[in-house]
Length: 396
Ligand code: CTP
Image (tube, rainbow, N blue to C red):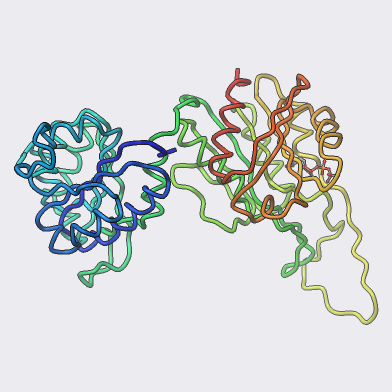
């Protein structure tokens, strides 16, 4: 997503400047061309040499120190940038940007910039909550700058509250999302993720190994593409993405009811949850006591949610998933037809390193018209964007 993108990272003088080093490294690893600009105060916290080594580019600290006399860097660099990120943005930096002050490399560059600007404030909680800072942040929003809400937690000054710079990997995801094409603007997307939990008694249940990573990646990618996203999920091993309406459910019956209540209003519905096919016929109200000898639990079939939605669909584009260990194509095509879905994403879960719990996946996308596309191994985040790019073709 950030591959070959030109990013100007502006570092102002707060203790969180150290996190900008890790962010530079992550951006470079992801293929971005990173130029770092620093204020004099930032140099009190982190050396210029660190950013130069991490970015493998000159670091800009002074408007009058031109690395190339044929160019004016504070105009040239923002002109060539696809995105400017100010992280950390101190109260002073935010105040200067809000008032159009241009007295150093960063402020002059941003005043001259026409590309999108992301500002990530980091400071003491009281400085952040001061009406002057709040007003200045609102002014930056009115310029169209994206403000990253600071995290809440232990601050370097000893206070506990808002003002933390997000972790570098979270900043990277926000930066990456800038470059995701907005193919799903104005669309409503409903995604299911994770396992379902079928109760035996108050302390025991039947479930499966699904981590929910693929469904969460799809919800996140749909959000980044501009959709209004609802995520109906069982217990997840990863956090629910911000900016997504999350509805936690437990059993397949809860999931069915939740889906039916929302299905009609959607443009795209993706059923990536690993729904239990069976549940205990009797759910004990009290903890089941141990009895000597073998115990048999009678199971009954759950309702096939995907098939139920397939029968009900009118204009919605419906996507199912299939985790197979053999005869992938035959099983996938049979499910596609039986459940009346538009797309079926099939993966061979016997392949090492992909599927349940993994960060990567490789799948084949089968379409109702008989065609199919093989999507090679990649991160679930990249795969989610690719899949949604295919699904958008089918949206009415
Ligand atoms: N699914 C569902 N409701 C169920 C079972 C499955 O909605 N009760 C959905 C899953 O969310 C997935 C698709 O159906 O999108 C395929 O799930 P899978 O378990 O692979 O298929 P099954 O029809 O259960 O077939 P089998 O387990 O025999 O492979």
